[in-house]
Image 1 (cartoon, rainbow, N blue to C red):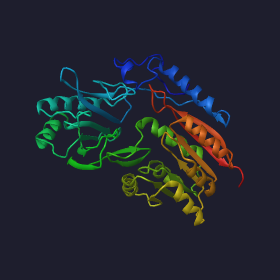
Image 2: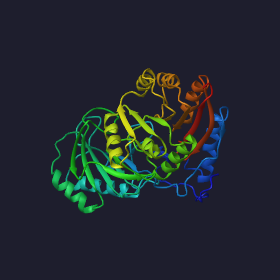
Image 3: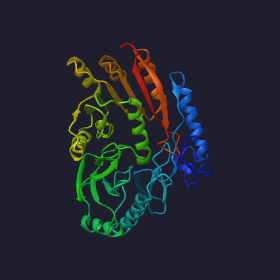
Image 4: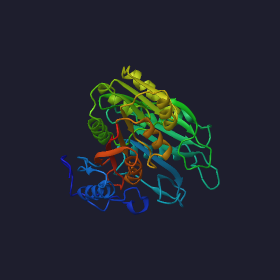
Length: 391
């Protein structure tokens, strides 16, 4: 399919694939997976524009730089860690995952052993008793930095200092450790209260020549190799001359906007998550980017404010969540009337819906490029260039 060299004939082979539900395409070779994803995107988007050949990975394994493990006990009272079985809250034990960073898996296995040694009880969702709920690990692909977030049901952590000391002895590669308190009955992994136990409380990683600060709650693409491919393709499609003012909607920690900053006159970023905006501002300073500014606001409302101020925007980069954009956002986007829209989507179904709205309101889809960010799964990322036709 794509030009990269790949392990095309090899199939994913995981012992828990039928219980976990995380790798829906494990039964297919990687070449077959790409063919299926190409068909999916084409079936939804070919009515709008040409869909280019999907860009796959050379090595489609162990790409996840964000790993989450839930802890529980089995029927024999042994501590287990893994993922929830699809559609349930039953924990499927996972020792090694073909998608996850192998350093993260090793740390999770060590934590499981330390819980036994320190006699720390795992949290029981049914009774509300116990302490240890989850572990979240984020790894820097280029920096090598590793963050470990211990999610507990209470801020009281017995033998905390000795536990951290023992973990660091087993894994000196860990650069920061955080305690996160989640005492609510919720499916959310992280709670509101945080405490840095070791290190600086965040990691940094390099992406497309820029360095980014990543906090526990920051949105950061999970596949760093393909993220560079995706973002470079998005900027290429925008065909920037250096004179544009661009808006990075859903800007998160500023990744797309800061990467594009070398190619434009000005970057304006907007994001609803306060922590992410703080990271974006720090990232701009860290990279000595002086032509970017970030705002903690709803993106739709912010675009209407820009329109009211008659602030010209040449290109809007948008990277919404899986649910896509709501009609309020899209209506505000059409009111703002940027010359180009570069839509980065992780869900081709909601992408089709949003494109249908935009093409009825003065925009034309020029080109779509699928990028395989999630090998082994049925998810696929797509970047679409749209241009305004009624200037």
